[in-house]
Every structure is written in C-alpha cells, then in structure tokens.
Image (tube, rainbow, N blue to C red):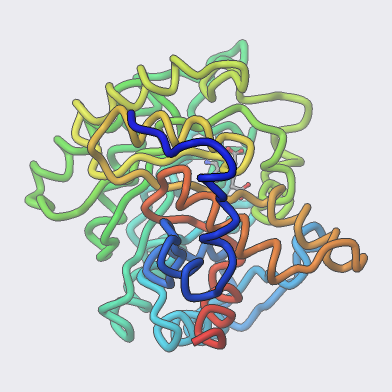
Length: 335
Ligand code: PBG
C-alpha cells in the first residue's frame, strides 16, 4: 500500500480544516433507510404501559401501535419488528400459543398490513414469550432446551407469521438447523418470498435485561440462563461458523446481537460474507444511553447518532434500535 509521506509533507489536519472538505472525505453515513423500529405488543387493544427500565418506550395495544406504525411511515422507516407480550395464562410448557393463527402476533400483523401495506414487518421466531419457563425452546425434565423438537414448533410459528403477512421472519432462538427447516416449511406452502433474517451471532448477553422486563419473561426464566444455545461472549470464530451455516441454510440476512459490544463481529462477518448484515442495539444498550442522558452526563442526540453511525462503519446494513423513531426525527431535522 502506498502511504503518504511523513510530516510536514503530510498534515492530516489539512483535510479536517473546513466543513466542505470534511464532508467530501466522509466515508459512512446514517440514513433513515438503515433503521428498524422494535415494538412491544400488548393483547389489550387499548392498553399502553411504560417500561421502567426503558424510559420513553411503551408496550402498546393495537390502537397505539397503529399510531406508531403511522409515525414510522411518516418518517419513512422501512420496517418494524414485533415483540409480543403474552399474558401468563397463555404461557405453557409446549408453547402452543406460538403457532395459534389467531394469536397476538398474527392478528397484529394482519391489522398493520391492512392499513400500511408498504411498512415492512419483521416477526420474532422464538418461544420465550410463550413458554411457562421463559426459555426460547421446549425443555426436557432436566430443563435442557431440546433442539429438534423446538425447531418443529418454530417452523409452525414461522408459517403462521408468513400466512398472516409477515415480510420477514427472524429466528432469534439459536437452535441448530432452524433456518433450513423454516425455509423448507415456507417454501412448501409457497411463501417463497418471505424473507429470513437469522439471528446468527446472538450472544448469551446480560444486555437483554430490560427486554425481559418488557416482555415479562424474566420472572419465568428465574435463575436459569440461555448459555446452552446462545453464544459465549468470549468467542469470535464461532460467530463466523454459525453465520456460515445459516447462510448455507438459506438466510437472506444475518444479525449480530447485541450491537455495540460486538462491533468486531459485525466487521468480521461483513468482510467474510457478501451478505446483508444487521445489528441489534439491544435494550441494555438503549438503557445505558438513556440513563446517562437523563442524568445530564452525556448529550443524548449526539451520542445516539454517533453510536448508530459506528454500526454503519463496522459494516451493518441496517440497525434495529429502540431509538429508531427518535433518530429518524433527528435525521430529518438535520436536513
Ligand atoms: C428472545 C429475544 C431476546 C431479545 C430479542 N429476542 C432476549 C433473550 O434472548 O433473552 C432481546 C432484545 C433486547 O434486549 O432488546 N428470543
């Protein structure tokens, strides 16, 4: 590689002198096209509930959710991701509610699609909102999450979502082989254009705490963890191995989650695979930024936009963020 000469021939500050030259040199940018807004959905149409550990984010029943969807459309956000809050009576050992065609997710997808057909809808494929024990899959008597039995249920769940009109199904469960079997299931029913966003590099992270408060799976999970299926935060090779498998199995997009502590993984996946890579700025990352901002310790807008830009620089094509709607407003104001 040819490098420029040394100081004083080279002065890197020369290009930083003026706004125009800074603009010309700029390599990455964040736009609304990069944003996906995750939303928590309540059974009761008229309900709205705040989430203590995620100030400013609410669980929303259909009425409020349709207004949120309208705002996303108004700000030109390409897609939303639905996360259901299932009432405890519907949580069972076999997670049967996960593939109820009249369940909360399919109903919500149909309602949103009927009004805002252009808004992309991503649904989460995993059993944790539906299991009485809060794990993402079915368990045996020892509490071990069973892989193949779980995948059978995930396929039914994904098909139910596709039938309701979901554009993208997003398995976040980390079972082996689920992308292939979900693709087969969708294709068998001729949902050949339903896309799969695979949570490939999903780590057994402690940054999911506020999300588990939001969907109410924390209590059900108790002291159990998800380390027998989510990845060890100490590993990097494994993310490439896992993503490679998911790509071969038919994933259209792959996700890294959490986001900021795993920028190195985003970067590696982007250079290894010619695939769309998405990042999830998870609930704990949102909570950190929000808490520091509310204390007046950091400047919220600048820090959030800087963080979202760092995902782009690392190689993310899109970002799921609880800040998506706010960021879209900020980006529009800046124009
Ligand atoms: C579970 C799921 C989780 C999140 C999205 N889907 C939590 C978990 O794995 O326990 C976390 C998202 C966030 O923290 O914002 N299938």
